[in-house]
Amino acid sequence: MSFIDSKLNENRIPASTWMLDIAVRLPRGSEVLWLFQYGLYFLGLCAVYVFGVAPVYAYMGFTEAFNAENLLISLLILIVVAPFVRPGVLPSSFFLNMAVSLILIPTLVLYTGAGLPDRYALTTTFAVMLLAITGRVLHLLPLQIVLIHRARLLPPLVVLSGFVVGAIFLFGGARYLNFDLAAVYALRREAALNLPGIFAYLIPLVAKMAIPFALVFALRERRWFIAAVLVFLSFLLFGLTAHKSLLFYPVVIVSVYYIASSRYLVQIFLAALLTILLVSGIDLWLQLHGTGGFSGWFASLFARRAILVPSFLNWYYLDFFSTAENYLWADSKVTLGLIDSPFDLPYVHLIGSEYFNR
Image 1 (cartoon, rainbow, N blue to C red):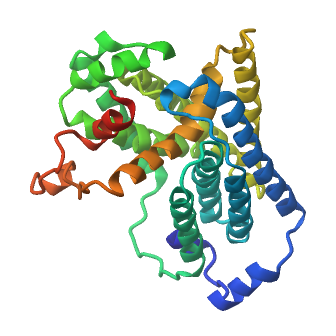
Image 2: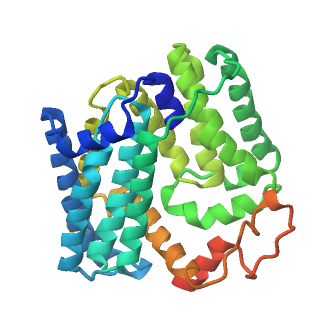
């Protein structure tokens, strides 16, 4: 973040002046809206969790143990954090607000609604504050690198994406081709085991880097056909790997691309999250009252899986490894097998076994 900001805003104010500004500057109209959105988002997510997610998904570990004291502490934390993450025009401002809305606030919601320990909330708060403060006061010189125009990067990224998708078909991946969201968990493991180990690195590389960057480049160059091909490749990867996120990446990328030029990008992003909460709340209410709705699919995919599950997993890892021996990258190919693992299971399966008995 600091590298990007130094390119866009080289004349930063000294750290002492910035800290004083944080303390005394009153919020403007757009920031009042932003503060209101954050408050509404936190309270709305608390309500969705306590009255919807916890009752419906208790079997997945979402317990309801609302703690009023934790609610007050969470509100105090938000008040303290808010001045350090004010919305702005720099990319770091948007990503910092993403961290608050998708990591810190879900953490505080679970801390409040599930009665989780103080150290869980405080560890996440400290991490976000560290990110916010260093991003503001740490001055890094821009790196002098050779710039490659996006038009030259687009063809190799498209070729790489098409090559990986084609290779999956060559290794028999068509046998696991599935576009039914209800069947993804049943097929994901089999689809992965069917491929050589190198695909564990190639698929994330293509899904999270090559296709997203190429899609943005194609939109910038107005190469609509190539953009459509990239969306189709992401859709195919979803069908071949059974990873639901690949279905939504293009939607998020295109949406953010077209609203990124707005000075109210953070407010628009929060408005989208509030819309997701509203629809999820309606979906869960209809499900609990047996009147249909989306049968819980919308709430499960977005409110539960996309917003709450990552923070819940953060708690499981923090809870387990605060007392257990650490991995120290023993499970990574980077260490070339030179570090012995203290456990017989990969860490993902270890957490699953410890907290889900499967």
